[in-house]
Image 1 (cartoon, helix red, strand yellow):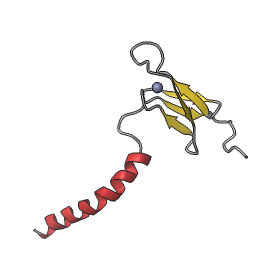
Image 2: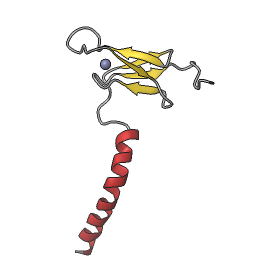
Image 3: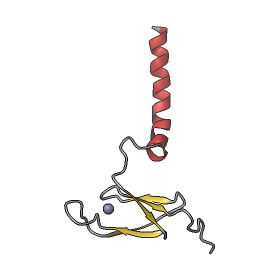
Image 4: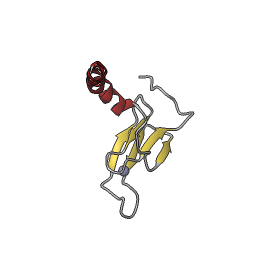
Length: 88
Ligand SMILES: [Zn+2]
């Protein structure tokens, strides 16, 4: 009795807070299908030819140094060696 009550209590408290945190920052359960290194922060994705194609969308890689395409889940990462912070 006491044990079960404690379990319910702790999971109730943990899930809402840490659940949303993990969703945005933890390793996703499914790996992105493709990772593309970009030398610049401005990238675009059209999904490539074939079935994965989608309207061309532009992204700007932010402070996290990567951005994921909302259409095809490709991940664009800022290429190592590129300047990390713009200075303006
Ligand atoms: Zn895409």
